[in-house]
Image (cartoon, rainbow, N blue to C red):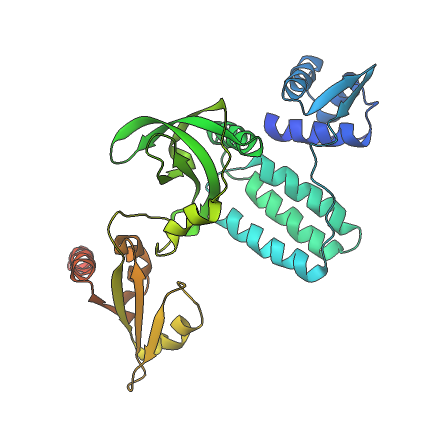
Length: 324
């Protein structure tokens, strides 16, 4: 008899949908047995999925809305492996469990295993890695609402905990989503309906999401997102870009050249083997952790404010080790 290990309610509901897609005749009693939860729990899950429009009733059967699942996609082994590496990086930079990610990886794994068992096992392993991370129900709840609003082209009203101004309420039209590896976070990029400016919102700081009735139809998405072309990652500024000039030692010059760190970077190999690296950046402060990560192998030449901040950080760091 098929049994499924205990999972949280979000993943259980995803798996219920998958089970009913394959077999609409499954009774709630049978689902209760499969998931090893009470009939009342399954009844609540089914009711919630019906209210969301994911499931619908047809006579005695409960069926899945045919528009709920994305069309079938077939990957080559190279395409599948490229997707795996991207997902593995995302999971490595996630601080907590993401049920939607886990359920999608399980589905990918089961389908891919039929033709490529080794690749399917890789996806399964990534799903397991994320399953063991800490739960964050508020994050999952808010993310699900944001995805629903994005799919329906609706504005959302969010209660956002800003580091600079405290808690604020903002109505946002969703433009994009941006994983941010350096900060172990995911971000929502949207247009503030009041100011009509593009803003970035860290998911962890979103305390509440309310889907609005008004539709948000964006026709110039590319133009709006072009404000990030001179950002290091996602920080924006009302000031023009500043030229950042770094001098890397010969010991790391080749490593620096292996990666294109920014679209507008320019590099100049020096006679002594060192490397001069130049780039125009909206907010150089966003680069500080990356620069410090190179240790003594890099020197900030300009702008002066960035050089000063890095020097101060190094001095404070040195003080911690003076006792040794």
